[in-house]
Amino acid sequence: MEPLIYTLVRGEDWRAAESAGAYHGSADDRRDGFLHFSGAAQLRASAAKHRAGEADLWMIEAEAAALGEALRWEPAAGGSRPGLFPHLYAPLPLAAVRRAVHVPLGADGRHAFPAGIP
Image (tube, rainbow, N blue to C red; front, side, top):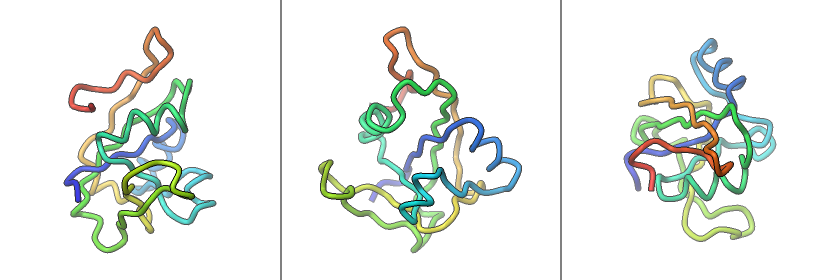
């Protein structure tokens, strides 16, 4: 679907992934059985819903094509949000990561994303 997909990772989890060579997901990911990703147009809403107020957050941009058949585009649980979301049914290999960007909180308390995130 989209060439690039995004996930929001807590700083401690991202540092562990850098050491391990792969990101194995948050507690929520492990509970649900897949890593939650968003398309660029879905990312701000996901941050507001699932990571509101978290200061040590990283935006991880990955190449969808590098993830193969383990990546599936599916509706949100319970159909709570429109559209399809990328779900990765495997650890995220760091080789598929295009960039990792710290996403600080702005003065308004919302995450300040880099240019290019609508």
